[in-house]
Image 1: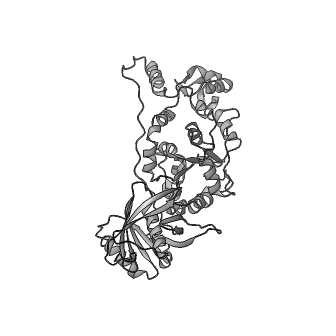
Image 2: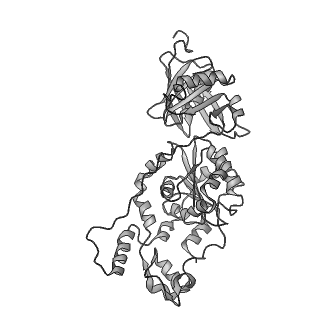
Image 3: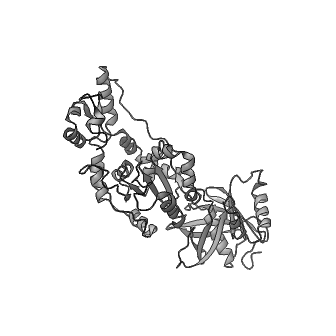
Length: 441
C-alpha cells in the first residue's frame, strides 16, 4: 500500500498535503482503512495519464509506423517496473539482461515481429543510460527498440499487439486499453491484496521464459482477452481528469475557474525509429513459381524446411560474418558521396568479398538496389499492397535467381510471402544483358 499510509501522508498526526488526488473511490476506501486522518484531504479526480492514452487511441497506426512496424507485423512491448522483482530484475525466473531479451530478439522472425522495451525511468537513471545500452546491446543489434521512458512509452503501449510485463502500472494500463498482456514477473507479495492491480496480476495469463517464446506470443496476439474490469479499475471517471483536477486546483486557490474547457496536452508523435538489424540473419526461403516464402531470424529451427542463406549488414560487429555472407546489406542515401553512391558501394562489396553473391543497398523504406556477382543490377520496389523490409525482398530475389528463375528484360513482379501476407515486389533490371527468359534477349 505504498503511498497510502500514515508515514507518507501525516505530519504530527495531520495531513501535510492540501489535496491527495486519487483515481477511484476504491482507493478512498483503502485510505479510510489505513489512514482515516487523510480522507478529508483526498479527492477523486481520475487519471490524466490514462485519459491522454484514451484520447490518442485513434492514432495507433501512426504510433506503429513511428516504430517501423510494417503491415502484418506484431509489435511485442516488454515493460519493467523499478523493483528487484520486476521483469528487469530476477522476478521472471530468468534475468532480462542476459537471457530473455536477446532470446526474443534472436528467435522471433524479423518480418513477423517487432520488439520494443519500455523500462521505468528509475531503471535508466539508477544504472545510467550507458550501462543500460551496454547490457542490451546484443538485443538492440537484433532490432530491439529502446523506448523513451518519459515521452514515448504511452504511444508504444497503444501501438502494441501484446505486452509482456510485470506487476507495474504499465501492464495494467495496457490491459485497460484492451491490449493482450502476459505477466512474466508477478511480484508475489508486492501488491496490496484485493486491489484492482493485484487482482489483475493474479488472473492475467503468464509468460514462461522456459517454454517456446514464439508460440506464447502468437497465442496472445491471436486474441487473449484482457480482464473485463481492467479499465474500470484504472479510473472511475474516464476522460474527466482535466476538468476535475482544474476544479480542485482553483478551489484550493479560492479563484474562479476560467470559462474555457479544461483540456489535456495530446500525446506527441514520436520520432521515426525503424529497426536496424546489424546482427547476421539466417534466411529461409521456398520458391514456388513466382512466389517466394521467406522467414528471417538469427536462429533457424532445426526442423526448418527450405533453402537457407546468410544475410549480413555491413555494420555487423563480427567482420568474419561478412566473409561468409551470401548477401551483404547497407542502408542510406543512394547518392552518398562517402560510399561512391550505391553503384560504387555495391561494386566495391562484390570485389572485396568473393563469397558474396549479392550486394543490397536499401535506399528507402520500400526500395533497394541490388548488384549480383555476375554484374547484374536490379532495382526492387514495393507494389501497392506490399509493406516489407527491402532487404527481405532482396533475399527473395536471391532465392529466385539461385533457383534459375528468369528476369524478363522489362522486369516482373515477385510475390513474397512473409508476416502472413503476400507482398508484390517489382523487379526491374538496370543493366543490359541481365538473365532473362528464353527469347527475351
